[in-house]
Length: 367
Ligand SMILES: Nc1ncnc2c1ncn2[C@@H]1O[C@H](COP(=O)(O)OP(=O)(O)O)[C@@H](O)[C@H]1O
Ligand SMILES: [Mg+2]
Image (cartoon, rainbow, N blue to C red; front, side, top):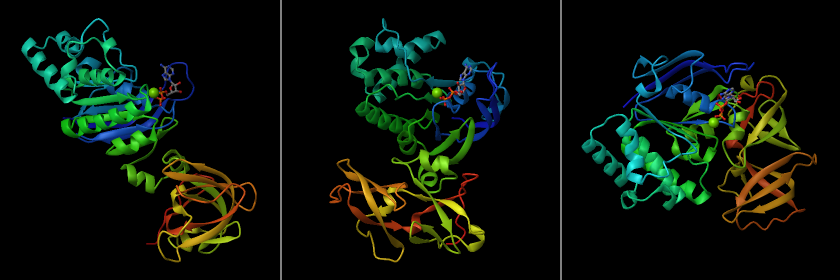
């Protein structure tokens, strides 16, 4: 069991002008499942490799259970890492793949046998202990890779996009397996991904990164519901949040020729009249009212595209300016067709406001 405290961590690779990681501060609690989420190249793997001890630290500290490990070699950190490409030893069967790392650490044979059988049992690999990797499915191989990390009984698990090589169905089942494992074993886990669905479903908390820096840290739904800036607003959610420039009035905003009441913001919070970005999640637009109430404001738009996805339908709607598109997520049985005019209802209690210059959220200050 372990607490991982990262403070002011920075990484600059030799010869590169920009730091890959800058002033990264995050504490991962004992037994916590923390997800590092961000686009490719934002520095996730660099952070993970520094925690593992595979990459020297440029600035800041990493402490495990209160002990700074900056100078501690990787093999003495008691950390197990699972990568995207899990190289199993092709000539060894599952048992020996699982046992290999323990033998190298001179763990007694009886103890190796106990740990390997226990991990195999947990991962549903018992029937395959004598099989070689080529005779296993992709999912079974990934479970062996996971098992190799589990048998080490480490203080901390690190995962670097372990599911990205799997096909869609396997990704879902392995994801659920990992969630169950972590829940049962309760080992402190740091999981890197660029996939927002993995982040939302797996993490106790998500740490969202952009260009080497932490943008926001919070529980998945907390971050989804209250994004700190437009980057987070667009990164979490598929399709992403619509961001539309609007002119502010006293306590409302003007979207096309419709007044959007902004009752959760005081005139002081909104400041003087100016343009802000109105954030609308596709699921906060409705074809039929979800409930009675004057919080639902009708907006008439042109239907530019209809995308039936089976369980739901995405509508691309164009405002009367002819250029601003807004995506709405409506029911599977919509009768709207491309080229028609549609009136959808916006739930104005669910909208967000962002400053177009800083991209930061303009927080609500009224209940
Ligand atoms: N060994 C390296 N040498 C030089 N630059 C690197 C090295 N590894 C990563 N980088 C650079 O650091 C940045 C962050 O990379 P990385 O941590 O791999 O991001 P991510 O895992 O989020 O995709 C990128 O710009 C990448 O090109
Ligand atoms: Mg990476």
